[in-house]
Amino acid sequence: MKAAARDLNIELKVVYTDANRFTYTAAVMEEINADIPPDFLVYIFLRGQGAALLSAAEQKGLRSFLINSSVPVEEREEIGLPREKYPHWLGHMYADDVKVGYDLAEHLFQLARRNGIANPEMIAVGGVKDSSATLDRDEGLLTYLQQQPALNLNQLVHASWTGATTPRKAGGLLKRYANTHIIWAANDSIAIQASITANELRGTRENIWVGGVDWSAAGIAAVKDGLIDVTYGGHFLEGASVMVLLHDFYHGHDFGDQSLVFKTTLQAITLDNYHQFEALLSDQTWSGVDFAQFSKIGKDLDDDQDYSFDWQTILSQRSTPATTD
Image 1 (cartoon, rainbow, N blue to C red):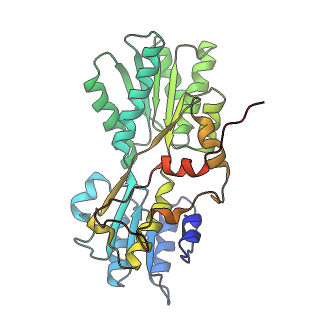
Image 2 (image 1 turned 180 degrees about the vertical axis):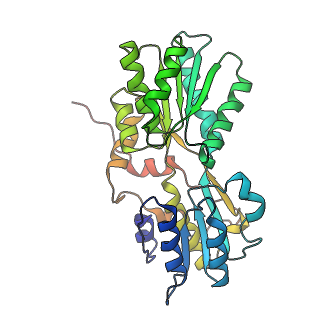
Image 3 (image 1 turned 30 degrees about the vertical axis):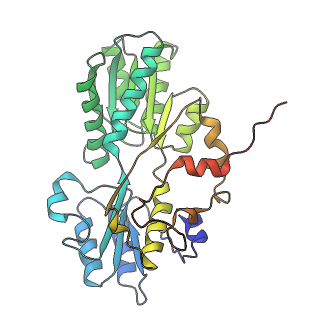
């Protein structure tokens, strides 16, 4: 987000808080009520707090953009869509968690199939039940299972996002279902702990495939080290993407002509493609990427051309010729 703001000449202020939702809400409210408020406010929708923040921003005439979290199912009717009940709520961008739950199941199934397992047995460990990401990823998993009768889900349980409860829960499932071939996990922390537990119980991870979501540093390292097979992620690109959209809006090009809600498709990092991402992700300054390329301002582009924030374009900027010893 900082790199994109730098490329687009945006003055960006980042406010950090702890994970407590009340602390987070207070920090957002402080920005809303500031003597000199920002031109735009970008923040995460929190369960039970989002409506109050949108309302407060609306009363102040402060334009806001929600990012990185969907609206929980039970609040969607009340909240509506951007620019409906809250005209200053300009847009919303969040990961397509239904799709990533589906894609992760398909990826792990295909791994098992390629290794000679015709009818794989799966256990699944989701995140906390009150998270919209958990529910959406579960939905994607269950949709894939309906479409793929050769894959059998023995049981889906839920654990803490930190992975702290995973050894107990995954361990119980692995003992109950000794023929497990696949562990579908809702995030990297859960996947890592599940893989460690499987290794401890079996003495090997042979013929058991594990995957998670997040592209966390630990998750990517676990892929590289062979502890898990895949991590889906890249949704932190949303911060940069929103900088582009708001930059263009400020300069007279309304992204609403394309959409008010953008869903981020997450990408897979595996041992096969890890090297493509390694240099990119290790450069925390993102100095090799020009995020201004995604803007429509000052370019001879068709107004009907959609915004496209994709990893292939970013990777191509960082690509270097292959070398040999």
